[in-house]
Length: 165
Image 1 (cartoon, rainbow, N blue to C red):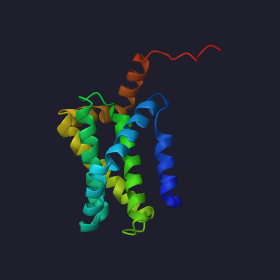
Image 2: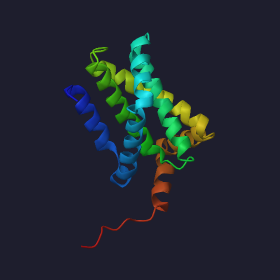
Image 3: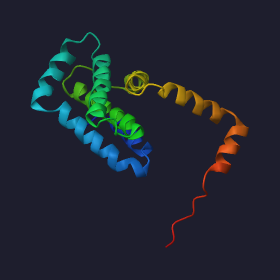
Image 4: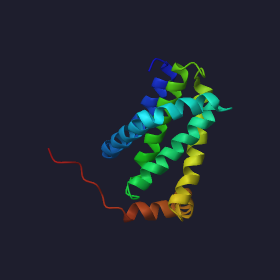
C-alpha cells in the first residue's frame, strides 16, 4: 500500500479490534485475502471492477458477499465483531488494489462512502444470515439509551479484577 489515506484508515480499523478478538480478526482477513487474490477469483475481480459502472460500489458489494461466504463456511461460528472489522480491512485492500490499477483515486470521501455502504449492506446481510439480529440490536440500543436500564445492567455484570502480577 502506498496511499497514506488508505494506510491510516486500515490502521484505524485495526486499532478498533478488541485485543481478545485479534486472532479471529487476523484469521478472517487472511481467509478473505486468499479468496480475493486466488488465481480463480482474482481475474474475475479485475474484470468486474473494470466493467462496473461504479467500481467502488462493486467492490463494496463484493466484500459483503465474501464475508457472507466465509460466515457460511464457518458454519455460522465466525464471531460477528471481528468479521465486520475484517471486512472493512479487506475493503481497504480492495480500494488500494483499485487505485494501483489506475481505476480510482482513493481519498477520504471515497473511503467514508465505501465504509458506510459496507456497514449498511453488512447489517442487511447479517439480518439474512441471522434472523432476529436487528431486534436484538434494537433492544440493546434501547437499553444503552436508558440510564436506569444501563445502571441496572452494570450492576448485574461481575466486577473484573485486575490480573495479579
